[in-house]
Length: 77
Image (tube, rainbow, N blue to C red; front, side, top):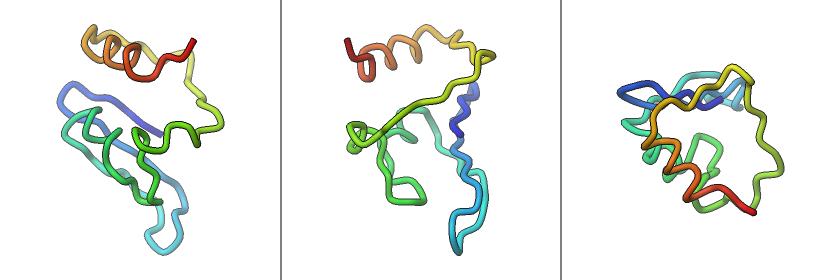
């Protein structure tokens, strides 16, 4: 699960082998997307390997900069 806060972004993973579960904090959404996560996946580098995205209907992208970033880098026609 990825959560974007005003001052950081977090990645949460449940049951990740010997590291267990946890919340990993990154200084920004861009830093999270471009870093190797606990399972070795890097969302920028490995985007073509993503099979699906599940987003809650309660997810509100109210930061115009983040929304524009996501549209520019991850929207595929």
